[in-house]
Image (cartoon, rainbow, N blue to C red; front, side):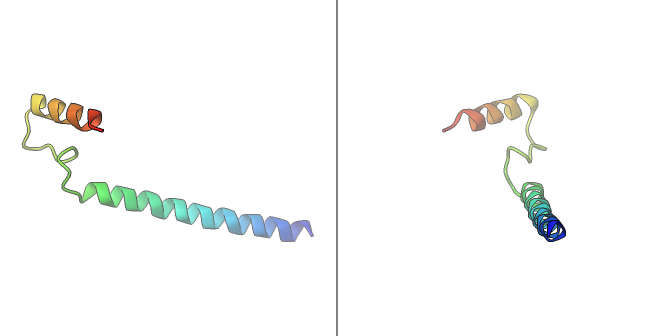
Length: 60
């Protein structure tokens, strides 16, 4: 009986791990290939970057 419970727990842990990995991959993919200026700051000076981040973080 305990073997059956252990197998069920292992199954759920594997499913949760797969869902978590897929979620992380989706988040990384979205932020890597998005056009958010917060992440794409190549053309901005340091002052412009700081101003933009401050505005983005304080905006509600």
